Length: 205
Image 1 (cartoon, rainbow, N blue to C red):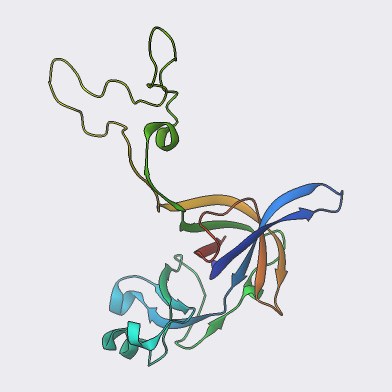
Image 2 (image 1 turned 180 degrees about the vertical axis):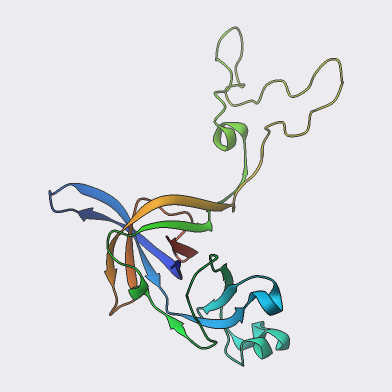
């Protein structure tokens, strides 16, 4: 059975395992999430459930969305497909909590990375820049040649300066190090994309 929940990134911590080894980990507020729609193969062509998480001001939500969620205002709606042959049964209004996960579970996390604005090629693509030699004075971080003599144009996909960050980032094979069902918190190994407060998807196997 597939496990999934939405959470909010809080902060990174040090986790010490039984042998005393320090493991970098990220603490998240996870759930609870509410089932807002159930899709099946007969009416929709595939099996999935839609869930809502968090809250926001009612004035920022359209009438159509409020009607869809039966008047409850959620900050985030996500849909998850159910695997073929899954015997999971959900109904609208069901609540999914962090209790669905256990210590030791392997999970995939997905979130939006930090936005870094307009950046040069050294920061954005890891270019080395030019050497400060042979009379070069201000070219340490320049991109170098961007064109070709024959075609007389810049090829599509050439790595250049531009907006960096704010990308959807998926990280696989992270471990659940701890679950606090009383306070709806989950501790996951490693770094997770985004700033504090970023909405994170946690998907188990």
